[in-house]
Image (cartoon, rainbow over all chains, first blue to last red):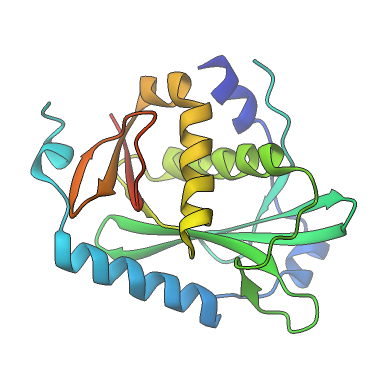
Length: 56
Length: 145
């Protein structure tokens, strides 16, 4: 868990300058394709009940 | 265990994380997206910004010799996102089998720590099953235990 805590320390709050440089990728073709693929898999195979309910 | 990683920046859009990989191939911007595809279920995707087109792709091996650092940074973004969305389920699949194996390597590498707090399923041979090191999967689900 300590290793995970160390990883979590990396976040920064965005600054005004950086925000202005960051593009909006909501309509990016790559991300859209990935979302469609995810939906396709989950619509076809679903999520296992034991995963949703934490049962073993 | 000390994990070297890049600092990431949470973009002004709700679920984007940006960071820069630096190495022999120069400075490469990488973007991580968490996108809600069904209520409470988010797709995790990330790739490099193509500096010529401004678009994202993950089929190009940018090869900045920092694979582990990039994986640790993505892991950090996952932990940050799950902090904000503790009830969320993440789905992740690489654009290619090699890319999916990269995700799998990252999960296996940090499995002892990850498995304390997260439940992970892997999809293989037509069905979901609890993640086990040494098995090969096509995609993954993750949630907080």
